[in-house]
Image (cartoon, rainbow, N blue to C red; front, side):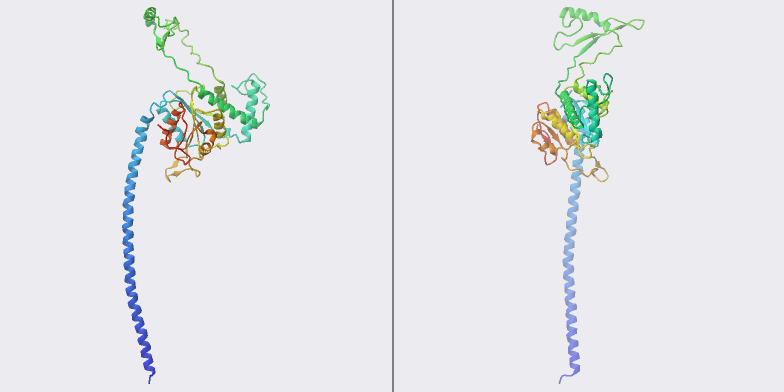
Length: 414
C-alpha cells in the first residue's frame, strides 16, 4: 500500500533531478555562449586593427598627395601657364559676395601667364535689375543722358538737366543690358594698338645721328622710321642756364596727348563708374588706375556663384545672353564656391552645390560653341583651367570645364 511518505519522497526526487538537470544544462550553455562571444570579439578586434592600419596608410597617402599638390601649385603651375597670355589684356567682371580669395588668386594666375591685367569691375545691389528703385534710377540716368545729348556724362552742363523720364523703367533695363553688352563687346573685338619703339637721342648724339641718317636714309626729318623694324627717334631738349630749354621737343613740361579717342563703349563704362554703378578695382601692381576702360582687345572673365549679392537671373544671365546673341564672345564665365571654414572644413554657405551658376548656361543650346564655362574657380586647378580657357578664346575654342556633372572635362584639350 502506497503511503504519504512514498509520495513525498517521489516528488522530492523528481524536483531534485529536475534542478540538477537545469543546473548542469545552464552551465554547459553558458560556456558555449561565452566561447562564441569570445570568438566574435577576437574577430572584431582583428577587424578594427586592420581598419586602423588601412586608415593610417590612407592618411599617409593623403598627406603625401597634399604635399605634392601644394608643391605643384607653388612651383609647377606658374611654369605651366607662363607665357600663355603674354601681352593679352584681361579683365574680371565679378558680383560682390562671390568668393573674394578665388577672384584674387585668378588675378594672380592671369598675371603669371603674362597677361596685361587691367583690373576688376565689381557689381553689387546697385545693379540688381529686378529692383524697381534701381530701374527707376537707370531711367533717370538715361533721361539725363538723352537730355545732354551725350553718353559720356549724365546731369552735366549743356542740357536742361530736369531729368524728365523719357523711357519706362522696363525700357531702361533692356537698354542698359544692351548698352553694357555692346560696350564690353566693343572693347573685346577691337585690336590693341601696337606700341611703337622710340629711341630718345641726347643733344650730344644728334650730330652723329644726322651724319648717319644722311648716309643711310633710315629716318625722316622728324625722326620717324622709314624702314620696318627700325625704331623711330626723338630728340631730347637741352637745358640752358636760365632753366629754359632749347632745341627740338617743345616745352619739357608738356604731356603727350593720349593715343586714340575714347570710344562710346569706354565712355559708357566711365559713366557707370562716375555714377558708382560699377566699382573699379585697379590691378595690385598698377601704379595708378587706368583712366580709360576697357582696353582694346580685352578678354573677359565673368565670376559669380553662391553668396553673390545680385541674383544671376537679374544681371549676369541677361548680360551674357546679350553678349553671346550675335556670336561667340571673348568671354569666360566662371563659378566659384564660397571659402571653406578652416575649423569645420566645410563651405561657409549652405547652398554650395557645384554648378548652380553655370548649369543653366550649359543647358542652353543657344550658347553651344559660343561660350566657355568653368565651375571650379575656387580651386587652383580651376584657375589654371581658366587661364588656358582664356588663351583658347584666340582660336576660338569653347567648352564646359570643371568638376560638376554638367562639365565636359576638367581642362581644355591640349
